[in-house]
Image 1 (cartoon, rainbow, N blue to C red):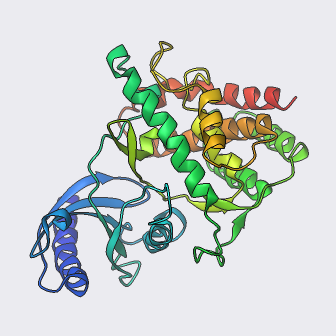
Image 2 (image 1 turned 120 degrees about the vertical axis):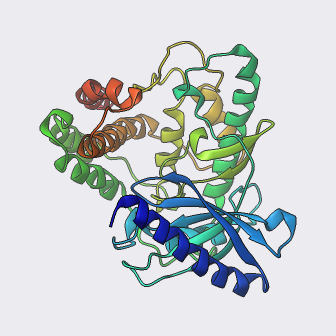
Length: 343
């Protein structure tokens, strides 16, 4: 069966299944339209139009696990919906509402969850080519608000939120997670990852009590309007772990961090690392000792995650994106930078 035919069949099935699930949520509702929004290795995303519901519920975002693959790890959309339900309603937290879900019969019949459509701008200023000073005040406000939202997420007690049965990702686990990724990529993308991993393990600081970590927390994974975060999205790699993992990842997308995928060294308008950390602390975030080690871990993680993306890009053929092409020769240097940070 051709790819186009498979896609048509999947959309038809989703329309039927989503209508059944929606009617259990809002009796009389009907899915009138299913349109692809984005696609990726972790999940497929569609926008549904619903008839028979209030206007604010008429547009829905459907996250679907890829058909034919076990819905585990970053493909576990039911686990993601469980998290969003647990986070929703806590003071200062901004996440989309979950309307309905269907566990399917994986892997042939993929599970999905349906979220409310949250309007907003999804943009990573540091990775965007636009450096218009007219946008700087907006981006600065977004960054500070995102720091406050992250603090609010980290203030939630996982056990009290019903997530106490989730495994905790230790700092050692976090290093090993990205080390395993390095073992799967071509040699030119590996650098001296084993030496860097050993350096991280040998200098590992004491861990803080676990919190809900997004795993890829940055403005590019939020929807924003008028200087405020309306919703944090893309929770595919969330876990319970040390809050400093999220904080330093967020801080990597500032101008002074000099992210290797940034298309320009000109100012982007986002807050400085110092401003983000100060706002996070003022909003009641976790204590932030030993941040240098976590900044090093962030470089190691970014190098591994980028290597995976480049490997996948090569596998499907065609040209890599400009950002991936730019980062390909820089991965070994990112590991050196991480080692230098921890001495």
